[in-house]
Image (tube, rainbow over all chains, first blue to last red; front, top):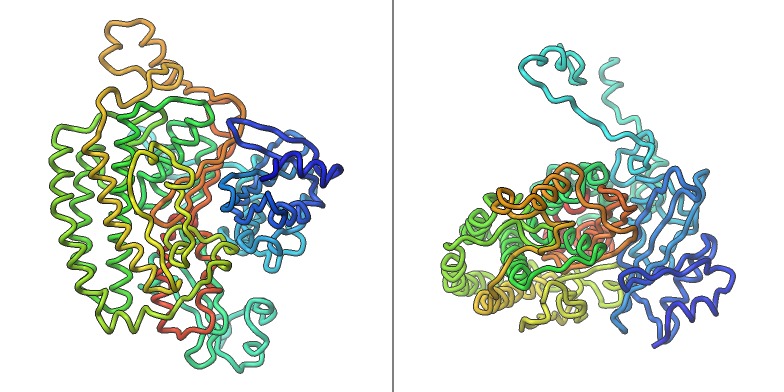
Length: 170
Length: 413
């Protein structure tokens, strides 16, 4: 059983940017263009064998820069332990290679990140919107995308609020 | 004439390229729409099927009809307010969703949970598993044509929902688990009600098995279809009974025990063939094992408080407000501002009835979560559906959709 931080830093001295540990969870921050090689290394190296991709999740750190992050939650059924790979991406044209070739499970998760954050996964076999309608404008989980509200109607302002409601009238 | 023109589909055939085979573009195979209101799709799932006769050449699922933006909404709510949103994701596993979200909060702030609360969480999570498997069994059998199963399963499910209502006041959207423990202790009637259920239910499982397990029609419709090999199941991210049906012994309750699951004795049933029938046998056996866990939890239920005493995160009981100034201050701070967990990020996984339910929680130190992401089993299993259904007949597809046990609220969130 290898230590994931040691073996990744020695195998990818340029690609591994930082490592963190919080509440026993290890996070390895990886450069965007080498995520596929790092994933393949984690999956195929004897002693690491992270053979299961649980999840791919996007994060928006707006207004910080680098603005976006994509987290990969890897799990090893052989050694019963987890690892988080994290990639930071710039706010303008965020793009990174898709890991569907290594972990087919990433297929829909990456589509979800693309749909809700607008992060483009190059080399993805079928990068379409998945949760939002095809013609939707914008990416809802971005922090600068407003959350809709509806004003509460009380008896004293019922008509006033009703006039501004968006539902269709005859 | 203008009306007729409007009714013609204005889409472009190029949109289908890459999704279906070249044979569909030339018209050799038929592209058929199934859903989103088809009764066997368990909610609103749309499938685009490419058919060669009755054989499925490709299957393209289309989801998002139940997308309600729960993750976005949770970012705008305080940690404790947001628990109510989790009930509404997987509506057959509300307490399991509460559990994973509370575990994530507890991990990020390192909050203790009293043993009584942990045992009650396990007990209720296992009742939720039985509840979910009952709905699955009833609807799956109904899809395949065993009509009466649905009625029997829902009859028993109602008894579990009565127990949920007894403890939380709600049949389904219970919001009973809170960070640091439970909302409040279970009432006095709880124990006899659960004991009643434990003595009543095993005979009912035997009834289901008598109706289905050796039924030649059931065997015809479920054996040898929806095959999934162990390697493919792992690569496609399948978990829970779908993975164990292929013979992979991975149950999060055993591998990464949470909420004191390590104190309980139970077996993890495994399949041999990885087909629809094996997954049926596994879920039925899981109901028996869940009942074993419920029995153990009830027999060994520790006494004591059901919520942590850490007043920075858990509000004081109502009775203290009249006598303690400090309690009033904590109460006021927690209900107006909420608590502020330390900065950090955690990923917590639990075994939901469907498979791995994960919660990825990022805190920026403010009273509202910066990002909550749920890794939901239905979403990942639906992405494996094209692989599982390729080459089978369209009549088998109904059984294959049933066997992955999808809840669209869980997939779309």
